[in-house]
Image 1 (cartoon, rainbow, N blue to C red):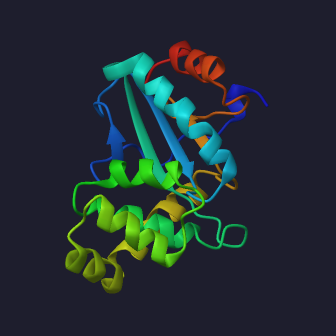
Image 2: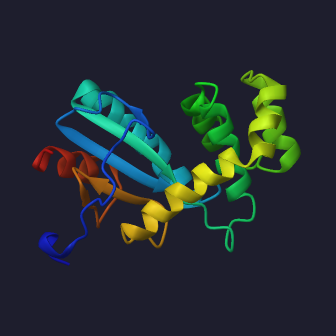
Length: 179
């Protein structure tokens, strides 16, 4: 598919997003991901390597796109990450979830939250209020508007990335153009 035919990111990077690096960076990498997806887990260390390589030259964003029909624990994992985010610990939980892909049951998610540590009464309240579910639904809606149908889906410098998710091709795509 020609780059000109690839969708552009409909929802730009906003303050509501979970991002690493400056939002004003010349390069952006937006991932729509699912914490139970083995492909997302496989690309997780590659994204970390890109972050190390480009530093403040890149803004890395993670948006939830759980696929519950295929991954029954994905939605709960996404909500757990959002609850951690409400306490300023999204990326810590993000990393723990990808470091422990076998630990996504309700009991496992609670153990991860305790271990971080999160304030558990606040964590429980945020989950029960529906705030985390709404946040995940907003990410899914923006992903759908952006043409996302599978995970991981990346947008490199505002344009959907197709092709390899290996380190060098992804790094090359990021360096090829800037926002």
